[in-house]
Length: 331
Image 1 (cartoon, rainbow, N blue to C red):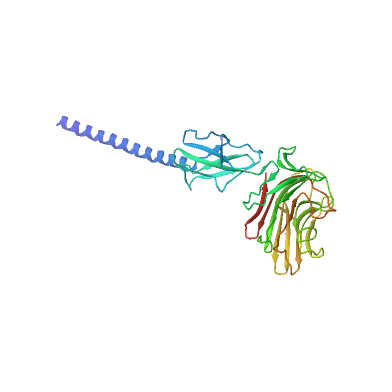
Image 2 (cartoon, rainbow, N blue to C red):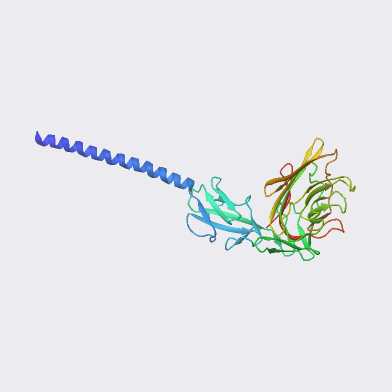
C-alpha cells in the first residue's frame, strides 16, 4: 500500500512538473513569437552605402539612368533618387509591404516592413545634367542647353546648382507646346540664391518673345520679386504680383507662386520658405492662354533691355492645377 501511494504521489508530482514545463514552453513560445513578429514588422535598416549582390538578409543594387553601379552615388554628384521606380522584393518581384523612405538631406534610405530573407532593394537614380545639357526630370523632355558659360557647380555651402555669372549666362529650354494646360492655373516652385542685384533679371521667362504670352519670375528692383503672366502681345494686358523685400542676397531661398483661375479672372499667392508673403486678386475675364512657347529661358529675359541673373538656381518645378508636372529641374 505504501509503495502504491508513493507511486501515485510520484506520478502526480511528475504530471505537475510536466504540465508546468509545458505551460512555460507555451508562454515562452508566445512571447518569442510576439517579439519576433514585432521585430520583423518594425525592423528598420538605415543604409548609407552597400555592395551589389552582397549576401545576407537584405542586399542592394544601385542604378543611375538604369545602368548598374558598384556603389550608391554620392550626394551632390548630380543625381536624384527615383522613388517611382525603386523597390524591394524577392526574385525580382516587388514586395508591397516593404517601404522605401529616402532622405535627400541625409542621403540615406530607411527600409521598413521587411519579412523575407534575401530581399533585394533596387535603388534607382536619375542624372540631372550632363556636359552642356540640363535634363527635365518630369519625363516630358523639356531639356535645356547651357549657354554663355552657365555651368553646374557647388556653391560655398556645398549645394549643387546652376551658376549664372550675371553677364551672359542662361539656359535655353526646348519649345513648350500648346497642349500644356496653363489656363486652369499652375504652381511654380523654385530654389535660388541671388549674389547681386541685376535689374529685371529672370529666374525664368517662357514665352513667344517680348510681351508675347510670357510666364516669368523676375527681380525688377532691389530686393523685389515679381511673378507674372502676359496675355498675347499686349504689354497692358498682364497680371503681376510684386513683393518688396522678398530677397535676401547671398542666401538660398525657396519660393512658391500659385496662379489660380477664379470666376472673375485669377488670383496669385506667393510663399517664401513655406510662409505666405503676398497674395492678390486680379479682376479680368482673360486668363493665361494655352499657346506654344518657343523662347524659354532660365536666367535670361525675353526683353533685350533686361539684365541677366547673377546667382544660383537649384531647382524649378512647374505643375498644372490638375497635379500633372509640366517640367522639373533639380539638383
